[in-house]
Length: 103
View 1 (cartoon, rainbow, N blue to C red):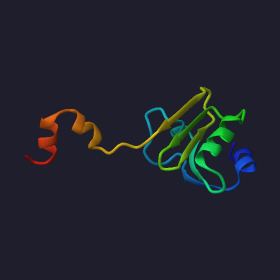
View 2 (view 1 turned 90 degrees about the horizontal axis):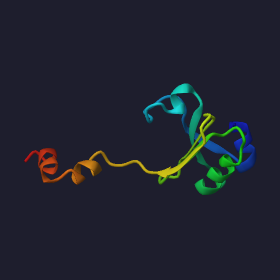
View 3 (view 1 turned 180 degrees about the vertical axis):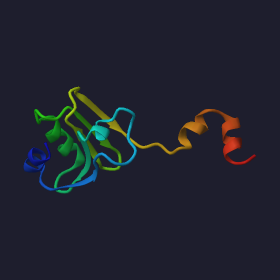
């Protein structure tokens, strides 16, 4: 998959393979996924190129310019972003905010 992807879009910087923290049941943990930064095209074009490959099952893009591609059996596509650990606490109400700020 990586060779075919690089042939289509040019060089990439792989930022994550099977290490690190990922979603539960992630293809990363099975060695079937990469996160990468495209160096010659936009992340939108890189994601479109990845979706066009027969070997790719899931493609996702993140607001920081990274692209996820995996060879899982299920076809999936998403656009997401990493949330601050406090973003959800702020939505829980004033008591969560007080607890977080020590008040």
